[in-house]
Length: 121
Image (tube, rainbow, N blue to C red):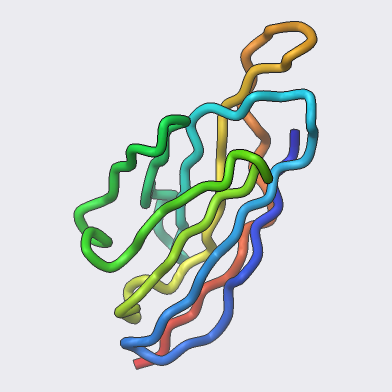
């Protein structure tokens, strides 16, 4: 399974963007999905997590501004980002764990290319 991120771009502070993360592969069951981000010179940080049942957790820095969601039928995850700040500027990556329905083995997806989000002040 590979994940492909999209939806990044350049936006002014206070604006919004919606990121998408699409998973390839139909013979898998995707469990937990996560959004990470990495700003230049910084370590990659966890932004939000969504579990298979739909419950979610957020980093304190994005609570109340970002909303994570998923469409299990499409194996797709989203990140709605509102009230964006310059400090949200980063490359955003998605990450997931899944079960292969044939082998019943448990895997983690590889890191993708990410999608750049730039927020201007």
